[in-house]
Image (cartoon, rainbow, N blue to C red):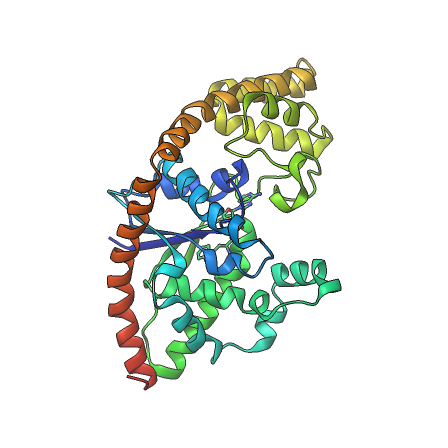
Length: 318
Ligand code: TYM
């Protein structure tokens, strides 16, 4: 089986953009690949979360992933900083990555613009190098992500090629795996992708209660892009047959925006109900969650050790 790796930042609870863009694929691909999933806490340190908040978010993200269907019996799930090797390999990669490649990353440009008044930290610049290390430490070939991560995966391939050219063939070619909804748009501003950083009204978190979901969907912007987004969301939470009927009805002017929104709220709430039930169960048993993470870190460490030993030898530091 080929290795699959993906990660998510512990930045608060997971939203339906994360789920439909990436995490649903993680769940669905667990039988097809040797899967490794990481809650990437080192990446989150490049933001400015408070320590208590970060600590809680690591736990919450893990619970969310387990609740939507990541199965620790099939897949490795671990906290990034608990495995030695990610930052070590990132340093090796830093030494072959041209600064220009990092400066042109869209995400870096956006985030450093936002942070401009306080000055940008170096972690934001190195961020995609650490991401390349996450993936290549496990020699992963498949990486299920949303569209916003494609540029980082292109850089991962560039870094692997540079390494292979300098030291001889070692790293595989990494390929993104995209879902049918690689870019879920914000409810509030459908010209932008759904994101926590756009504020509460932009996203539906998988922990949102029924009332909140209804309210957010009711207020969703219903211009052309917004409606397209709502119909797309419906196609993944509703049934295919009904979705086609909804699209036809909408085009024929038979369906009002308010009806579409009510129907969408209904299917989203129905989908999230059992997920939220599982979240509650895991929250009652934090020990179990931490055990799953520890076990995952142990398994990931074995693979990391094996590969890092080879890499260190290849570059001459072993
Ligand atoms: P993060 O934490 O921002 O998001 C996690 C995953 O969710 C996807 N996503 C979306 N997909 C569709 N529509 C949206 N509106 C949307 N918002 C988020 C993201 O594309 C991502 O797949 N840099 C990564 C974390 C990371 C990583 C890795 C990923 C670190 N190391 C190695 C893959 C492999 C990030 O910040 O994702």
